[in-house]
Length: 176
Image 1 (tube, helix red, strand yellow):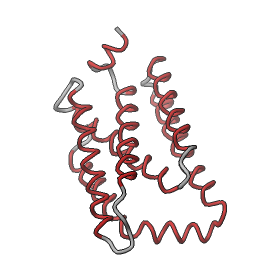
Image 2: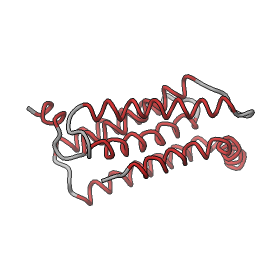
Image 3: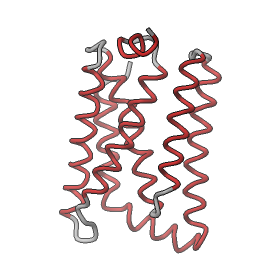
Image 4: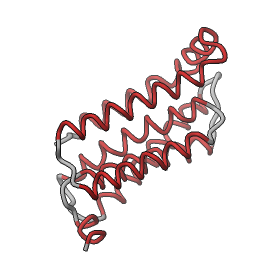
């Protein structure tokens, strides 16, 4: 079970990288040139392949869970392909991880749909906190679109968690 210490550490890592992320991304963009977006896509695809391999090796998913996982992955890929700015794609991945971890943490307390609502609410609050910090920095700006992307990424992570965990009330209702 994922503890709240892991959630705090993950959130602090997200927040701690804010002052340096733009500089780091600009360095990579200058180094990679026109292929920067390509390498962001390759990196994100690699993360997806590693996750699929993890679920495949663990052999914990049934057919319906695999279908749900692949459908979510395809929807995320389609959405990401429409995003013009590579950094926005990274937001989705960061907050998908957070959403997934939050469902794990809330599962120890809730066994119904309330756990997903709480996870989504906390993703939203952490995403707002992310943007407030960015708004306070001289080289960054507060952007409502980023809050939307953070929340969409968190939602994708929550959906992956809902589709890959052993039966819950939500999955039982969908299947039954």
